[in-house]
Length: 499
View (cartoon, rainbow, N blue to C red):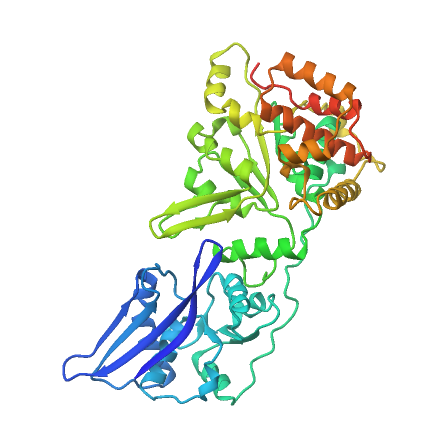
């Protein structure tokens, strides 16, 4: 008898429908259990998990059978333990050990890892699978109870989230109702530990980070050890506007695929901050592997990627950032296909200033290339903090992160209204045509820009990025048009760190 069930495998941040076909034929020889269809080690080991789970649950599979499980389409590589549940159910239905109504399997998908006692364990990529169900018109998704809240984020499909194999069968037979999924389906808000009001001094650096947050621009903080670069970078997330619902689902989907989504946090509502050590490899940063997984730049999507000690990163690692900084995505090519991960983040680099006219400065030039520096919009020298400022009590009139975030949110709202028909959302996303259309400059602004570009040797990219920053400064003012004052401030942040 042949039984077919629907399941999913993830590739990148998307889910692909997989048909789990189970065929059983009698044999006079030794029983055999085969899984075909390019499954990885976790898929192949499903045989042992499924057979022990069935025995522990009290279901007896007749002996003298050749059982073949085909995961179709056969040319797609499958990974993970999520096929345990459909394989176990397929065995029970194929051998007529369990009967369920014919319509119980119609428009239904199954996903779950089986423990040896028959209970269902957490699986990854559930949000992507639920979105695929809705897109394909599948009405029900059966999965482990621990994944229920995550799947329930997608409206329009019925979620059956149960704890073990017997409960799955009881629900399919109509003998019990699916357990209610407990709200809230969201993460508790974690307030940032660093408030801008707690950062003493550093007025220029704070202003630069406000501009970066408002327009999504990249920042480089250069200063002596202990001057507050790391503190400022950690405070940046606190002034970014909250994630929208769609952005939350995007970020949650990435963390679900990467198996970094805690069971108690089915929805990420806070912008991520990823701090990467300089020993990280290029694959760890951009993603990849035999079964491609998101890297740090994708885990920082819609948030902040912080590279401390930027000058200590190997040059080949830093160079892989050039394309994602322009395209806001990373494409990875593998034999089984091409996968694209989102990578729309604010890059914050921090480093100690080089000693000019020295071997250190020459080494720095080899590590951090000019094309990469071109993609950094604001460069700030962070001055050492005076001891007197550290000993002074917090100024009750100092601007808090909440106050700055309000201005940032207003600037982002202006950009959203400006670009509502342009398929972009922030100033950093503007292309050359967008700049010409949305960033009209008067003669004074053009003259100032031309003089600065000729004196400082701007590339075309640096020239256009300066205009984008000027547009953001005008949005914070707020001002409808870019003035000479806005351009002059933007030019202050294009200072060189190379001497």
